[in-house]
Image (cartoon, one colour):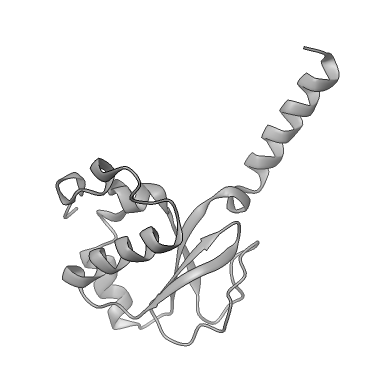
Amino acid sequence: MTFSRLLSGIFGAVMMLASPLAAEVRLVMVEQDGCAWCARWDAEIAPAYPNTPEGRFAPLLRADLHEDPPEGVRFSRKVVFTPTFVLIDNGKELARMEGYPGADFFWPLLTRMLGENTGFGTDPAAAAPSARVEGG
């Protein structure tokens, strides 16, 4: 391997690390102070989310309704309701879920949104309900 190829590879790896949103599927939760449904999501879903197949596939990124989207993120239309969950890939919106329907409906709706818009669910064992960690 030549020095220039090695240097090029290192530069590419550094650039990927420098802009984590550029190559990741993320779930952006748009919220605002005083949002009762946001607080309910925080109590019912947030503790378990990062430990689930969904949470590992689409890590959570939080955004405030009254501020600009996170750096590198483009919403396809204005977010009006909180919470709104926006699925992004390469910083671009793929789909959204407006509102929080409660724990019993959130998981199936999120799993469907991920499956219809990304490669999530191609490994059936990863999405099995028994693999999900509930509670905190």
